[in-house]
Image (tube, rainbow, N blue to C red; front, side, top):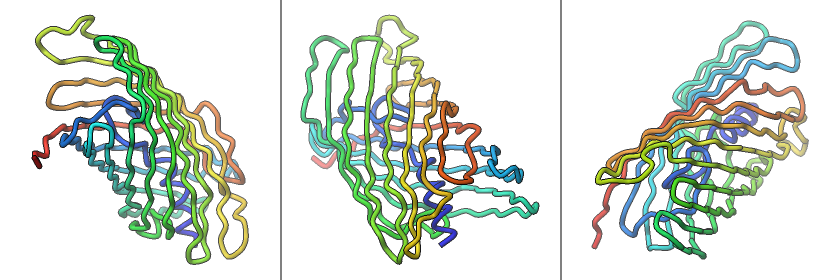
Length: 287
């Protein structure tokens, strides 16, 4: 049970939103063409030293979410994500150090675009619904034992060099093996600005600056019929970032710094989360 408690807290903070055309930590409503795909490999490093108990506990964790994106139809896109806990180091109050590696819980999501208005060149307004499931495929130290439905929505407004993205994603945690992680609610707002070029020429290469607000609320965990005091709460990050986009790949980096942390009970608070990812587009060619 202790391992599941740690898994619920860690995976909620380190598994990002679905990977798509523009956002780093925020979902977008931009299209992925039919029979086109994207492979996204991401590294997320979390550093936590703010111990409310004053016991000098420290946590370092490196998670590598691997995501496949596939355009099923012009309006329906599928996302499959498997997080890999590449390294976790937890130093306790007594100086004891725990290290481990593991696979996380698999997530399968679908995004359906119900509104699309391409009102000008390089400009669009789009809105989409998200729905999916979290499967208990992970190790008990980096996963929870339940099948959890995921529901949400995302909207994008783009006008030439500017883009705004807004999303909300709710995970309904179910009870299994007398363990129930708290529900999770993600909420994100992102602004992207094309720094270069001012106007596109022959080469489709661009450099973007990105600023995001990334929030996560989590309900309290219940195990053995009891509520775990040191679980749940709300965290809001400000996340500046940069993207370099070409026809063949996207490289992006972001630094998430907590603006506000309101955690229930004596939980470690985050110092920062550093993000680095690469996206590679491909054609499936089924037709």
